[in-house]
View 1 (tube, rainbow, N blue to C red):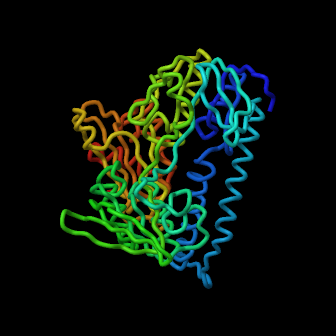
View 2: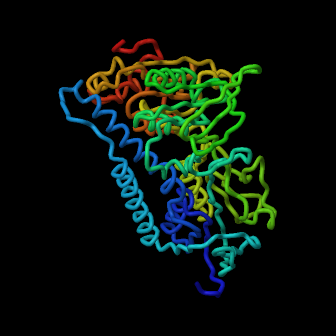
View 3: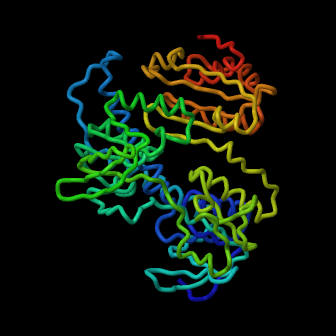
Length: 469
């Protein structure tokens, strides 16, 4: 790396789904751009989050289907897990997508700098490797996109063997006989489904009233009922008081009420208490960038309290989602390039949990809408009345719920649990962005037989006129 200070229109610190997408958009708009990443471009999502996790979940789903194959007239011999091949498939997918990101950056003339970037003065970034300064760059604009990491409370003695983070469990090459999961949010539920399907005895501990506590209550209750039926033990309104481990495994002391304590034992415990922003060491305090409750403060154009310096993705606050970070990266670059900026509406950002059944949602729940003063009406339609779900055997307990404004029919939120609902929610995001009404959707024509017909039926149900129930 040259010691000469180089000049860029834009420097981006962090090469995850926010940073690398911003870099590509900047390249498309003709900005001379560098992307500073200390590890691998693609970030947590590609290398130790979304992508490898979903690969494992898909393998588990295929295993689940194989065990059900006789229902569909397909007789198989002994069904066995090949964990080595499961991990090999996961790594193949990650490697292919990683190479794709590197190709796209090269195609768009982005200079990738393998180093740690730290702010020095408003337009200068110092570059470090192994703690040693190796160079510096000047940039007219800087985007901070350093992402997040699993929260690791100091009182928990993480050892990477018995007491694990989500990063650790992705490297686990065997199925434990028993697994305790502290945290019933998205990460905990996905890994709970995964290892229950692969044969582990799974226990989930959640301090709030329901698992997936930020989802529609009926959705969360339905998923909890399904997972419990499959043998997962779920404790809600339960606190983890202590965690320890020895050669025999992990021990977790839980508190269910003021008087009731219980000691749980398992081979391993996954601690999935959420993720925290990675802002330490960037140099925010040196140049006066303000932080609020641990997150970098930004305005509607993603500019921090220091002009010319932007922040996107997990470091700016919830929801901590890859697709939110990517969109923020695009919008920040549009602002830098002087383009018109469409607003980012947090209520229009979809959320997905990739357990089976999947959970997908967007917008307000009924309770949230009513708290905001809306008079609401809802439409609900079950997958048990959907032809394609009956054909595929995915008709047990799932449904879609549309929450609409009673006066104008505007869609305020959509909440789904069922097969492949992750593939539907993008269409509902588009509908809400275009201010579609339930009537608009009920008048649209959906192909038959498809799972997506539940959307049209739920839209009819908003007026109490669903066709197939």
